[in-house]
Image (cartoon, rainbow, N blue to C red; front, side):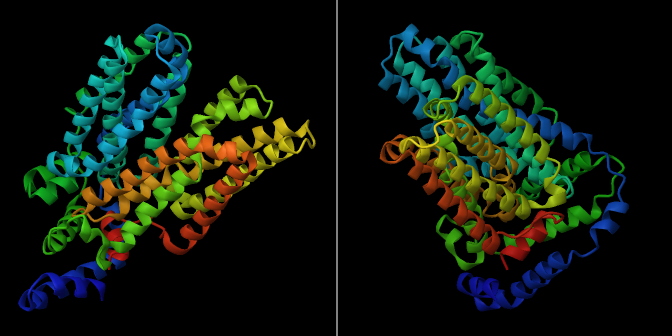
Length: 486
């Protein structure tokens, strides 16, 4: 087996004889579940209000993420006028956010592993707080760009640590629904910032962006640390206390705590993982799944379409303001509606339905531009463009927006979660930058060809999900990771 081969290459033969049976036995028990989930569940008297409170605090970080993304669109004209910026200088201000996010993505895993999930949330909130103040007081481009870069760093850390924290504190029957709230709050932050930004000044909007940071910083004093991180660090008393708080004072946590501890002890017998170790056979499946989903999420065109949706509607002859409002509403509503469905329908079906819808949306939009470019059926062009974009964003919100983050938070063993999560998050942000940067070049090459290209990527995503991505609903994190990495 793969684990046996890896252990043989890392440890001497005497250790192999002792460790391999333990690892195989434990993974076998995880795959078969030990006691059934129903037996474990009925033995508990769970009171999950602390899980919900912790999730609320965490997704305030997601909302902050959304406010950072949504800030630049409604403030562009006012900032250019007030500070006398050129279009090029403002473009630097807008795009430097993703540069900061990539830096945050690279460091997010090590930060979360070193200071804990709560510690990483504090770091992210502090950077966003500083960033907003810098933007508020900016009187020249340098301070403005510094604030935007700092916001991006905090956003990059939030994008990793929020779904990881929620996944590690949630019961398995609620984990998918609670983790998808990450995407719901990101969408809400983007949409609300866009609306508020039309009625307040850009400096006031920067001050409003501080509010979620304050909620996160204060709320972290009220919630426990991730029990799995505490167990990994050897904080036994704190681990039990945190798990008991999350499951309720009268809950029976013996089964869950034993399973977590045994799995972490199994992982601790393996050598410490480095970045290169992620590509060993033992971890290759989980890394392929996590990184692959991020590649398809971004290179399917979402940031090109999201950043330039107004110009898409305008080019197709549809009202850009009305189209953008409808786009924002559908994005939030469908993401929210699909949040409770993920634990019933499963991750894989949602990904497949979503990717299929993305293909259809891209083809409809591409058809509208094809008709326009060839002066055919001019009356159908606006309707096709609107239908295509709404099908696209509705489909993305139903699955490809949230589910890759849910799966990423589930599949990596805790001993590589920091490095693997950082890699997946970095790939995600690099994809966001690459797609948004190349969109205008692609459109100038061929407007309809651009959407056909995005459709092809989303068609490949369907094949990837069918062949590679496992179903993870209804399983503990330890069972998922043992099945993938054995």
